[in-house]
Image 1 (cartoon, protein in one colour):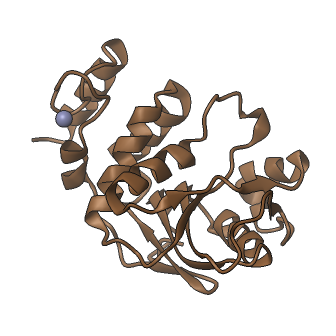
Image 2 (image 1 turned 90 degrees about the horizontal axis):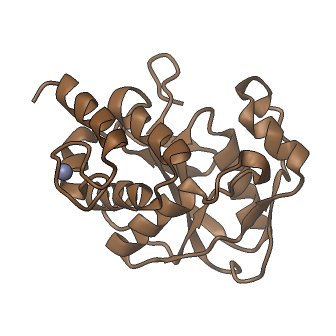
Length: 212
Ligand SMILES: [Zn+2]
């Protein structure tokens, strides 16, 4: 199958959202089985004191799926993406999956990272705890501008309820751009008494030969 074919089907999917954008199967935005051959995880990166695994480089169809997830508003697409990630990576030794929180002013009704985490939960049987939040909306805005992201305060995020104490935590986000947001999430988890064992993203933006 040429790379054009999934792209054409992807746009067909915009017209007929209840069919798989790759194989045309009715009832799902995309089949987990159709996503698996598209993923090509590079070697894990290290973010401070935990590894980051990603499904592939942030380009082409993998990137299109994130845009469709963010702006198309179909949560089940994110769940399929999470399930695909959960099948290509072995279950980590974690107690809880924690998605990176949504910016409050994003205008979207759901957190795409949480949808991906839900898919991982179905594959791995690890609970999802949506327990992180941005300390201030102003800081959340910083996180959206890549040029400012590295200056994000260390306490950009906080754990909003108890329950992470002693928990081996697995962070989940849709895309890793600079890695700063995930590192700040890691600091919040640590301050909440937990320990990040690893992080997973659907894609990551390459930086030269390395991908973070
Ligand atoms: Zn399919």
